[in-house]
Image 1: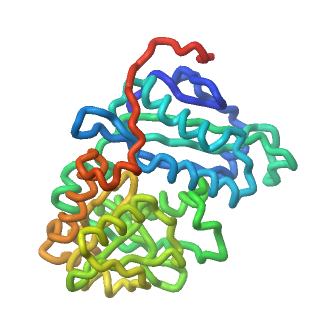
Image 2: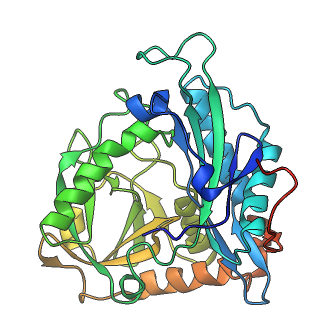
Length: 319
C-alpha cells in the first residue's frame, strides 16, 4: 500500500496528493498509450540524498515517448529538475519516482488526434525492497510463465510503454496465485526474456550471462549498471540467447531492476538454483551495487544526482 505524500508534480505545478486527478475519459486510461519510468533515490552513507541515474532514466522516458510519436511538453532538463523537486518538497531522503507521460481527454477513440493532449506527471513515494527485504538476502522462488513476450516486431519493446505491462501483470498474477514470488517470461521463440518487471542474469562456471538487447527485453538502466560494475570487478559478462534449460542448470540466477535492485533467485519451477541461496557472484554484485548507490564507490559518482530534502507546507506554485 502506497503511503500518501504531500505533493505530486503535474503539468508544471505541484498539486496536493489527493487533487492530482485526471478525467475518466483520459485516453491513456482506456488504451495504455503512454510511457513511464521507475527511478530510485537513496540516502547515501554521508547522510546526503541522491537519485540514481536520473538523466538516463529521463532520457529513456523521452525515447519511449518518441517511439509512440508523443512530444513531451517539457525539456529533459525540466523533467530532471521536477523529479528532484518532487522528492525534495516531500521531505524524502530516499524513495521511488514515477514520471508518467499520458494523454488527456481531448480524444476518446483509438486515434489520439493530430495534436494529442500530452501531459507529464511525476509522483514520489516511499518504497522499500520491491520483493521484500528477505528476498535480497535469501532469494526468491520464480515460475516460468505461460505468458510470453511478444516479438520485437509486434511491439515497441525498447520503450517503457504503459500498455505493454498488461502482459507482465498477467504473468505476475499467475506466479503469485501458484505460490511463487515472481515470473520469468520467455519470448515468442522460447528463449528467456525477462521477469515481469526485471532484467535477468545467470551465472555458469563463473561467467555472467544475460539476454542481449536484440532480445524481447527492455534495455534496463540497472541492467546496464550491473554489467559495468561486474566487468569492473573482473567478471566476464556475455550477452547471449538463453533457454529454459540454462535457467534450470545455472549456478546462480538473479534479477536486476530499479525496483528489484539485485535480487537472487533461489528456485525456478521447483528446481533449486545452486545451493538454494544467494550465490557468491550475485552477493558480490549486490554488495557492489549498494556501495555505488550509497556513494561509497566514487568511481560511479556521475550516476548520482545529489539533492537536499526539505519538506515545505505550501509551495508558491501549488494549485
